Image (cartoon, rainbow, N blue to C red):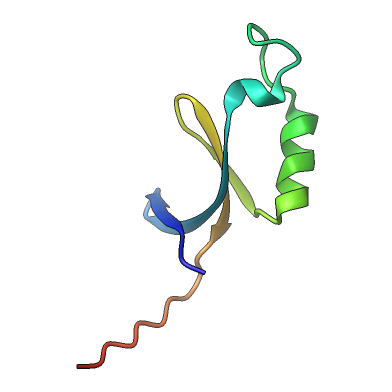
Length: 71
């Protein structure tokens, strides 16, 4: 299934889920808890988590892409 595809450090990733950073904190004004992030990562099957300014993106690395171009 194609969804959001991003590149980060010249590697392509399929974004499985995006969640606001504060969803992983106990309160809006506290830092996110690493164990909460890791539990969600494991649940959704992401192999990497990339942080943007406001979100965590739970991603699957695209290791090999077959492009079938037909006319």
